[in-house]
Length: 447
Image (cartoon, rainbow, N blue to C red; front, side, top):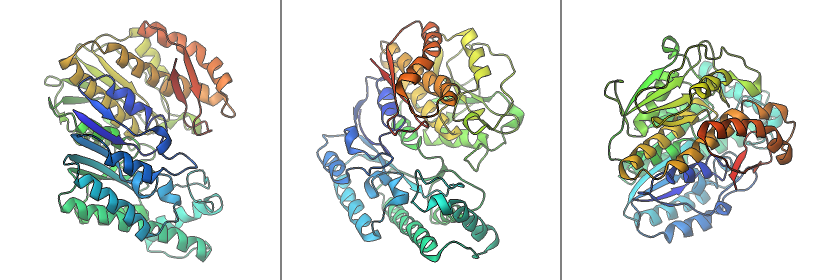
């Protein structure tokens, strides 16, 4: 099966993770553009280069595509770009022309522009450092109370609203393509959601027009990648470790953790079933009062129950905390170890991020075990990456760093490496990088 994949940008979780996952299945021939063509925190993607790459691909079966990458140069540029509607329309019309010539299935997604509730302009326009919270409040009150009063300068508010309107019109254009039968699957993503906001209004309007809306963002290309794997249709049984709290809502999301799990499984084209009938059990270490977040000093109760290794294939979404693992839970996992039934772990960022990436890896690995069983080491490398990133770094080492420092990070990660190597009975020389020069993401490099 030949799959082409255009990520959101060049972050490790958007670029490297997809490559790591497909390495565990020899049945997939994976085409991904050079990393240098993709956007970063302060650079837009080489749109012309990506279109040429796409045009020159050999015969493929599926294209998994971030439409923001071609339309604006990436997810972050979609919020910053000064390009006009007509300029962006020209980019995507040429994309459509190329895709029509490929005669393959197209799984695509486009974002509904987020509204972050802070004054950090790292991923927003420059004026966000002064007016971000005010813009969020304006958006919230506009939706909830129909209140248009604001002390935001007119030129800033108008620029923001015009950027939103432009992106919304582009999304309606994509939706029209879907109605023409152009996409096999088209998803519109809601990222960093609140209960009210202009982004929520846009999502509601798109839904009325027939759009499929999903909470999440960065994981969606991976969930769509999972969707390409049709045989067999994987049967998955969700098991919440705090069953009575599955109705609680995760940080950065607007739906319950139970619904988030259901949406991810459905988009990945998995069948939700009972534990008796499941191919894989999906354990969710969910929160009991509120979702914690270590880096933001938001506490929550750690997992206090027992853990026993299941007797059938299983995978684990550790979402008790956002942006990192539950240390107490990981301790229990390591005490028991992992056997042949282990199909993956994830605690990457938001609940949707963890679930989507985990389900993708679990589904592709399950399929690979039906074809060939000689890819265990690639699967182990994937799991080492997740534990080094989600547990060792995000839940522990990140809290002790004041700035990106590769040498200090390597020193601090050493004891965590030793524990992980002991668990997985292997050893690698690992280096660490900060590709976006910030602490939010680390890159795990095997040497």
